[in-house]
Amino acid sequence: MTVTQTLFNGFKTANSVRVAELHVRSGREALRNVGQGVLLDAVTAYSNVLANQSLVEAQRTNVNFLRETLGVVQRRLNAGDVTPTDTAQAEARLNRGLADLNAAEVNLAISQATYAQVIGNPPGQLRPAEPIDRYLPRSRDEATALAFKEHPAVLAASFDFDVASTSIHVAESSLLPTVTLQGSASHASEADPTISTLRTDQASVLGQINAPIYDGGTAASQTRQAKEMAAQSRQVLDQMRNQTRTAAISAWVANEGAKVAVTASESEVRAATVALQGVQKEAQGGQRTTVDVLNSEADLISAKARLIGAQRDRVIASYTLLSAIGRLDVKTLALNTPDYLPEVHYHQVRDAWHGLRTPSGQ
Image (cartoon, rainbow, N blue to C red; front, top):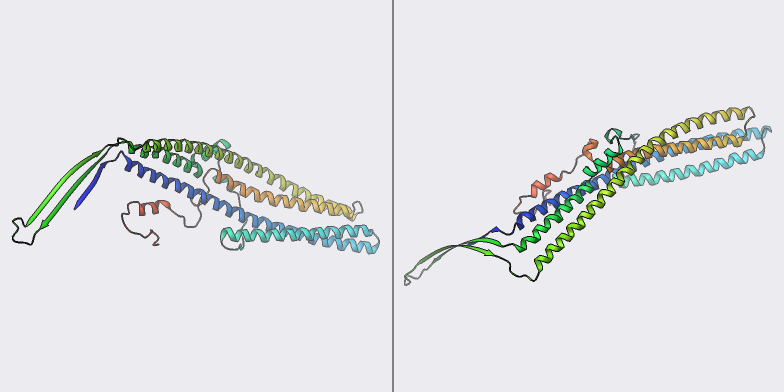
């Protein structure tokens, strides 16, 4: 039996373990970044379904209004109060409303299919979505600072840079000597009684030091390659930080702009509603034409569509900002759903010396 133990190998083993652990930490951040994308896709799909449902209802209300307007115009035509031109205009607006309703229903069907793809189930009774301002930073500077510190893409790139830096030491270990200790023991027995020695026991301990003298430049070239890879990883880290800062600023500005858009759209809908009511009363008194009523209704439906879109964008923008600072996850949102814990899996396999099955039993 012979046992060989390495006592020193130029710190290659320790640095290799460090590289593996850094790969694990980088993988965790990559997983967290994918999780953010999945949650943001879910929020977008959810908000699109709600928005398209509201648009369909608004277009149906518009079609009902246009049908009633057409009926009133036809009765007034029979009474001689209006001309056939007014009837044709009302019919044209009704047909346009039907086309807009059909387009809204098509968009709703598409958004429902996208929802089923992202969520896994078709949408049921969806509750109105709300922005998540309580989780968001209070200033643009705070948003960029959090993105630099907590965004998983930046952290993953940072760990990748650490991997490349530590890999330099792994490559340099080939230039250092190695020390090994070898112990051997043997036992031999003879069954022949004519031999004077019936049993032989031997044991030895041997220490070895191997120092590299010439390897054709392999170790040196590998060290240079590792240094170049580290420089490249550093550039990737700087680029990722710049991209994250730009994304955080863009998300912050978009979120603030969405707030203004919602407020303006709400005011527009209120004003358009009052305007339509006034034009209808004036038309009944003969001071407005049918075209004025139809135009006022078109202004109102356009304002409602802009409000619905602004409300959807407001919700998505708040979640996008949370994603830009690296906090769009199950824990921050306190979601009632199981979450994958990579630390648990890591400790299940870290010191496993044997076995082919994964922790899940595969």
